[in-house]
Amino acid sequence: MDKIMNDYLMEIENYLKSMSDSERIDILKEIKSVILELQNNGVSTEQIIERLGNPKELAKVYLGKAISMNSKFSWRKFGAIFALCNSFVSVSGMLLLPFISTLSIALMIGGVITPIGGILKFVGQHMGFDIGGITIEMGAFTPSPMYSLPISIVIGVLMFWFGKVLWKLTIKYIQAISQKKKLI
Image 1 (cartoon, rainbow, N blue to C red):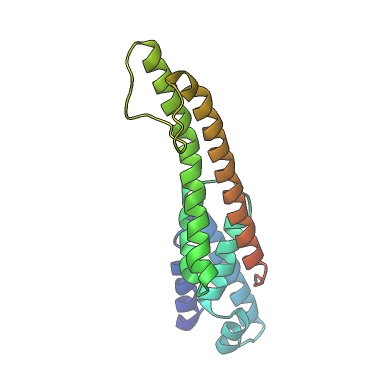
Image 2 (image 1 turned 135 degrees about the vertical axis):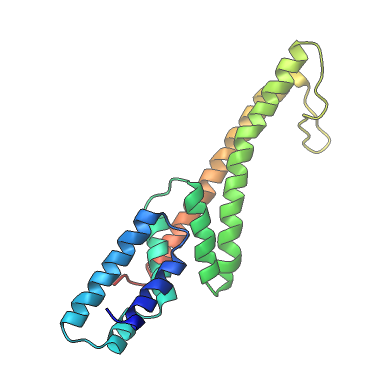
């Protein structure tokens, strides 16, 4: 393989840094295999690059496919979403994806923390002291400490559920974008 093709593969690898090592290596092996097959069939380096396209665009397709393969959350996937966002030049890639992915994480974390606060408030009330820093306020309404536990559980479940829904929408959006481009 010549220097131009090695540089091409290194550029793709650079765009795939947010992926796990095993995924990145598999993708690079697949692309290298295609390149070698084309070279063995007498296709010139320029024609191969023309056929495969811009390394950034090719990496973006693989990155989108890897992110959208399942909708489970992981911090590595969260980082990959931001890498994918940086590779888009459209407003949706620069604004929408980071916003909904970050909001989904914040809601899921808040959905876990809110009931914990309700439990602390409830236990504190039964032990005879009030934890002033933990309150639920909905406009002018502030529930008594006895009601803070069930209210915090309901709010926590709703926040967590809404966060999961936003995460799944993020993945579906990435799938829709990725389907516009084809893998090699």
